[in-house]
Length: 257
Length: 253
Image (cartoon, each protein chain N blue to C red):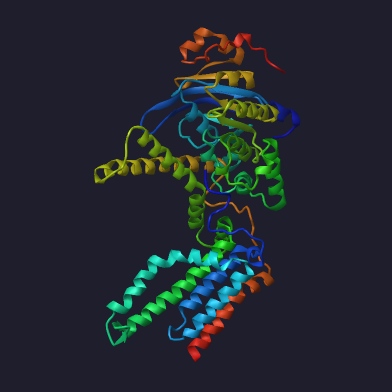
């Protein structure tokens, strides 16, 4: 990466022609193309079995071997840059108990940066900053299983923020959260200045946080546009098994800044 | 949720023993046990001195005697075997209170009992002054195979998660009217155990995925560098060195 204009022009994430079949023959992705600019917050919507998880696992090279390319800030995802790619793509998995595997919050948040070679006071500072950004600084020395579910989810976000990723990928960030924790997480996500790709079934949450949405259906991108417009398109929604909660009308929602 | 914020074995405190780096304590406890085991069983006085040495450590660590003795009860099932030895062993016999006991059996029982008790007491002292987490750090520092340390650390992290899963499965069983009341129900329990195993296995795969996503490449990154000064080492090693002197005297006398 050379000049400043290059930095601005490089998309955070570029997926082109991505197709993938599992070894058992089940084809999950049939040519996926999209790109996300730096700083955007994008929702990835789609019914169960549309290939969302498969797509997410391609973003940091856990799954590979199909056709097509994925580029993270211009860097192609592949064997030679795997460590750097995994640092740049921060995936927050759905179950925080899977994500938080170290005995204390502090060690868990330190895991990623330490794996990248950070040590001592620098590492400590990185951990404090990441925990501070999700408002969990005072829980540093607690074991993860003594936190509430919402707190664990926030720590899970911090573990990924500590790696200073180019793009944050969240898998069902609002699942199992009570309304207050859900709102707190939304405030945190809005306050971060990173690119966000959010995989979710929670359509109001997508509308609240992501100006742009992609609909993944049967292994291809079926729609790409402004979230409010996609959600208001009844025919499109029905065609891809997407349903709004009872009484929710995306047209009546007035968005804050 | 789990019980309390630390493991039950650990006794929170701020004594000099608590403050020692974990790997020095591990080395000291291990050294002590090795010395005790290699002491000749005929030198009975030596075992008395060992017990006094442990008593001094317990005093320095401010671990009350009652606490220590209660924890020692874990030894009971193992001691049962030692009690049998004088009755079943062969050889020369003596009469004690009308019972015919084997002399070599008595020595054997004494040997197991004395060395076992001292070993358990040393471990209890280690566990009550060192947090489980630090024990792992210490083991890592002592260059134990990293895979073993990782397995142990996952046990600590996921013990509660799996117990919780087990509890949920039990509640689900009972909510559908199941009560384990006899052999007939063992089949159901066995299937639950199988399901729990598969769930844990799948969780293991998901955890691995999360680790790989954050740059795990086969070894745990070093997050806490534990170091010990020369003074701390000599302080910790005072116990096994004193024991070694006793042991050597035991052989010589």
